[in-house]
Length: 484
Image (cartoon, rainbow, N blue to C red; front, side, top):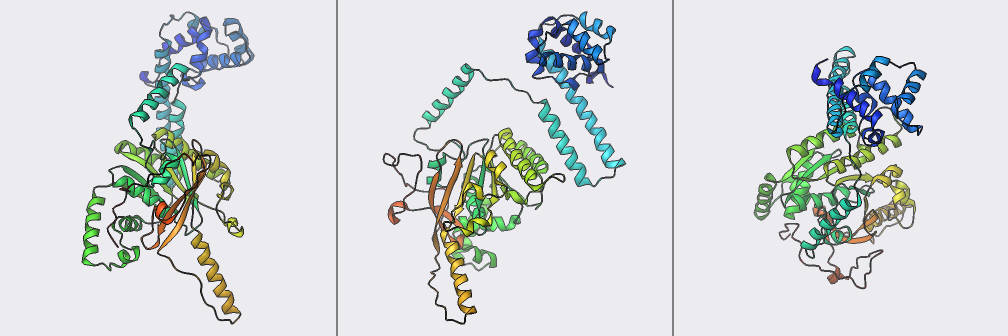
């Protein structure tokens, strides 16, 4: 093996430093692992040191000899070489050098593994890529180290954060703009590193809801990555154009546009041509593939501020695990990726149909499919709820029953162009839970802030002193809305 993949002198110096200055072992053991050493005899000695340390015995020559002889791995010459090694003053530099060479060896081993699974085992290319992605992620995760932050560091960083918020004045946004004023007030935006779950039953509009957020960001020059597992990219763009132009979605689909609407459409297309929106509509993706794609996209486009997965339960599992274990791995992987890339990741999720048997069909945390791990990993969980969806279903069921009995049916259901909608904050790690009222414009598949004062709709806040709260309706500049 090439010399630049190991340094035996450095390894001897580190092991010697541990023997003569055992107090260094705490710092070293938090970074180096047994297989970071190249020489097998050095691995055995470091492993013996770990065992002695765990037994709360002194790491000295005698205890090391006993431990190694017990395992029949004592080599007197190797021990003499270590004891005679030159003392070092900058241990951290030596440790980092050993760690770096260990990483290179792991990467070299990975290239051999790629050759084996590709040529010898003749695995399909998709499986090879999955194996490589997973192994590479494991290697990089093992190589990451971080120290504790002490109180002075934390207080300094916290004070800097407070001063930054103070300089913003009355701006309620701390994280990424949700696109909705009242929801911003409740959440202060989606925080960097947050995993946000948006859950609903089918037809409630969870995709439409997040597209409003996406539209708000891209029209302001922000970047968004969208993994559309259910819908082709062209359908997503149709919805975005409907949101921006106020042209009904159905009219866009069939191209039935007036001259004025064509003007609005051309303006919106010009804006979207410059938008930083990136859509992956592959349809089937696992957590390793998503992680690889998003890392690459983020490195190429640092302006990416939000990633969306539509939706979580469609993501493929890895291996033959139970589905609950697969979903647990997916949700945990998304949370860790959000922290790594320092952006919020929003994952849409389906709800169990059991809630429809309740009188009050507003969702709860327990209604999320495979809810245990999702509920645990998520920083924010939002539910999209529209009562009119159930009113329409009930009306159809009454009509069906009347026809089955041969009775005349007179519908009392009134089709609305705009329906009341609720965003239920079921969980928020760093803020209150509660309800936010919105309006759903059906023909445009668009959610907008509810005009609270004019229609008397009151936003409900839990754990917030609403008596002293002030509500500034202001103007919503997030959406370009020409007249219908």
